[in-house]
Image (cartoon, rainbow, N blue to C red; front, side, top):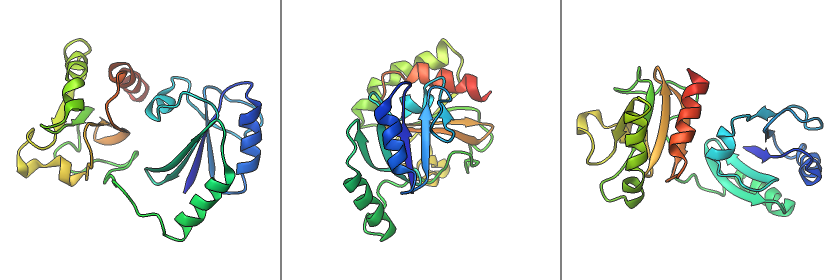
Length: 204
């Protein structure tokens, strides 16, 4: 279990919340630059993490179990709810939902184990997938980003990346660098082009 705390500069409520969280569970602080008073933080200068988590308000606290977001609280954080959630996770009372079979930092199995570029998981009956098709075309045509589309109706069963990677939903996006998983994202997003270009530039 990990507490991910998103903070911004000159945010007194962010600093106060951090002080009340540090003894509860490992806390990962995400900020646009290195701020004093947080005992170190993950610097997200290009806002990749903030964009991936769709954070708009600070502080935002996300309770994570592995790659699964369990709960999220924004601005006004109720620590009783946070504590109850942590206790329930420790006791195994919250089931794992929509698990993803790949992890950031690991090599992706299967036919894309050496691939560099964006892997997009779509389904034929997915309206959100159709909505983002134009952005995927832009990445390929205008920016020469390598893209592989996988999913039901999009690939041969013998190379079923959907099953091998245990991808539970659509649309989903995975960025690979020589087969290593650098980024995993779930759901439609209007900023897909900008975000993928930022990630590609960071990891190259």
